[in-house]
Length: 264
Image 1 (cartoon, rainbow, N blue to C red):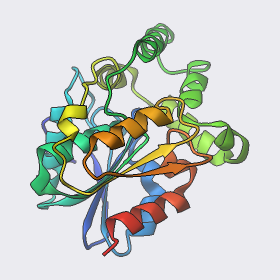
Image 2 (cartoon, helix red, strand yellow):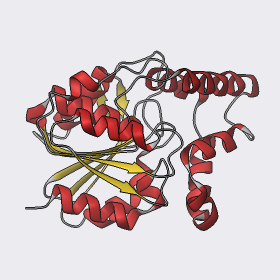
Image 3 (tube, rainbow, N blue to C red):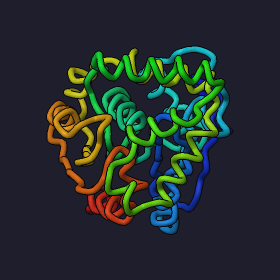
């Protein structure tokens, strides 16, 4: 547990060597990166973050800003006595990975930002997530059929058809979310999300943006627009993948991360 600007945050640390920090999507915990920890943990120091308000981290009681999330990453590094880290983020993690890279260039190596956006939330997304929060409040938590709505937003037809273990993992993780705490995160990351395209033009670190062809939350044009906002960013477009690439196709994602971050 590490004290940060957003409360006490739980991290799982494995291995030694060049640090790699992994921050997940909304509603997920550091456990979504288990396949990456197994793959990279023998040669590198892998840091899996339960983001503020989720998993074993301290519950949220108010909204936050992306600047505070970036500061939270710095606080984690300071708590582990680390100067720099490579950073891998999914969705929320990818967005604030961009904030971190632009704001603290001396604390980051390379960045892999997956299934994310630099754009503010559109009207449809605000309405959908607002409805989800209201219904969850009435039901006392994220329960079926709300869980099915989250699964549909996070996973695509390929995963529903061929990866039942991933569907079960996401369903179980979502159903354990503390609604009151998670609601603050949803409000902060969806309707309150800033337009970061101007900020990302200041990024100097190497960045790979990863998009899923089946991602219904951030369709391909939106993720490509994020990559175009970052100078010299590379982009990888994955077939058969939706919003949680590292869970849906871990072997391919591990290959992409390894080749980009440790390309020598």
